[in-house]
Image (cartoon, rainbow, N blue to C red):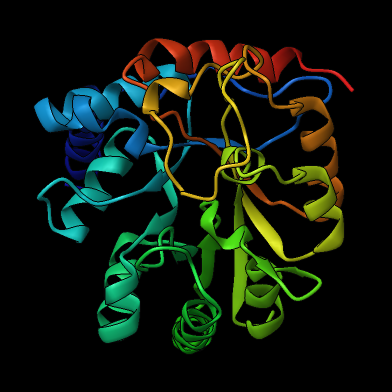
Length: 291
């Protein structure tokens, strides 16, 4: 009987292995200088997900990614989407949620983040009318501190993702400096989107150094050559996102500074309609970049 049970168990195991999508054996995105870890913000493939969720998860796996950042679950329940990610060998590290959810229903964000198995839960846009103001920044900081405290109790880290409009001048600095000073480091960390620091005319390397230890996440992007910088709108045409290393952002210096500043996870986010073909180019750049 014991032998029969063992044989049946082995057979079930083999069938399960054959049925499950194979995990990629490729190690991508790291090289002699850049060590990652690098993942993909799934929003990059939002158009593909709208047509075929499982097929797109397979594509992410086939690129060689192990880590992902989420921006929704494509009409799947959180528990089901987590299962799907696991089936394709993908580990969800971080997720973006709306500002309104953090403000009005923070407990729901906590519950969803737990179901998804996230290490980080954050927000990428603070609603505002016209220019971003001091009142907007102070109100957001209060929301962030409250949400961060709730998430911390569940072992999840809250983050805010820069989006460009926060660099309005304020006293001797900017409203981004105010956000930093008004948020509690034990509850709030930050995700630097390098395009949304560079495009408004700021220096990502200088900000990494100035706030070393407060940046745990980073979005890797590049901005098309010739596109003017200095806008505080928080918007630019998505076709201005280009493969890493082909644009105007000084990536080697930023990646070097990011390591020193304590960035723990990097995510390629490519909002271009050509993201599916640009992502492999970006990975090759990270594998060969030097500083």
